[in-house]
Length: 265
Image (cartoon, rainbow, N blue to C red):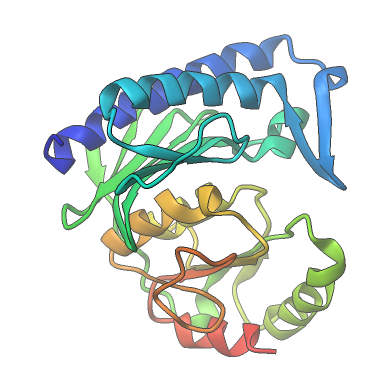
């Protein structure tokens, strides 16, 4: 395997290629081409086309690795290395032409996230990190800039509290969180993309983010980017071994206890 920095930069190129495909398809996109996976959970031919492109490119880049992908177009057996791919995170946003939506790619080995790349298509921003190498963002053809989480305390914090598709189970939680934080923090946002919520925490644009009932492909790349930017990432129970779970809390570190206290219903 190539060194992680070189590999990460090559994955950035693949994510951008997939993003270009998605951007082009959005120009003539019709909601009639949307399929419903579950209640309020959508997929389109664009998700699948992006996944096919990414799987083909990653397979050529690292043939020894298996895959965990949202649309299930590639699988894994007993490979030590696994690509974790969300070919279009924020599909509902994409359908409505509402930013942000992104491509998310991570490489894991056991419980270690080796690299993470998230390409936000609308703003042409590529967020990336590799283990021990820091976190960065590259906008368009400009230079890469290092990412650092913000320093706000809870009273000045901008939070992202997402709304997962499992509305029946999560409705009491989100009602509690909004009741707990509304008026106590600077403000609350819901942006519709887990991958981008994590990257915005890493960039200091958000101070904290929490969501449950999401897949590994939603948070794997972004979780490493937050960690490498100096933030903290756990599950709702506060465990750092969150990779196989379905909940995530990511913060600047300062407000992490506040979010953990709130999600511990």
